[in-house]
Image (cartoon, rainbow, N blue to C red):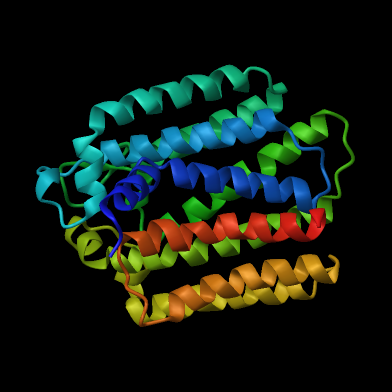
Length: 291
């Protein structure tokens, strides 16, 4: 059992989406490391703030009728601190927009497209078949995983690369496409366990996720297969052995978390350990390149 003060700190870090924002910054950092680009701290700050704002906005927008009775500690925490989250969301959004104005115009447009995609994911813009209501793009059958993967690829790889390109920095495009594929495979793979956790809730709300469509077992097989493909691709790439080993170890740690039945699947498992593998990737690569 965690001490109360440790639990409160973790709740604040995870449920306020500060941690996932740090993971977004880390994924952007991996792009700079693996593509040997000069680090642009403006872009990394934008990534952190934009992720914080979009994730908080998505949580608040998905408010259940009685959040205080939710079985999820995260939901209860979010709506006990809703006013504070609105303030932090607004502040993060302002910072992202102000810093975004310092980007080259194509990069700023890309940032706007990502923001619009993030909003469209939850805003009620799609009519639900057979019902008198609208829902976000997440309602479209099977779209959720691939949509999330695409947004993460655009933010953590394309935005840093676009800004570097317009600063006349040489870009190795085969490495860019390869990194985009790695990020997509990894993000989709670690998102599947979240959908497995929410399978009964998603069925109730009519969300057609991969676990809902094909079952928990097949969804788990898909997650495993994506991670194995990503590890194999990394291992046979042309990066130095220590870099390949660092990335493979991080992915193997993720695979262990997903396939280990003894691990208690509470909200710390999902929002700290699974999401934290994105941070682990950066730390592992940074250590071998800076060591």
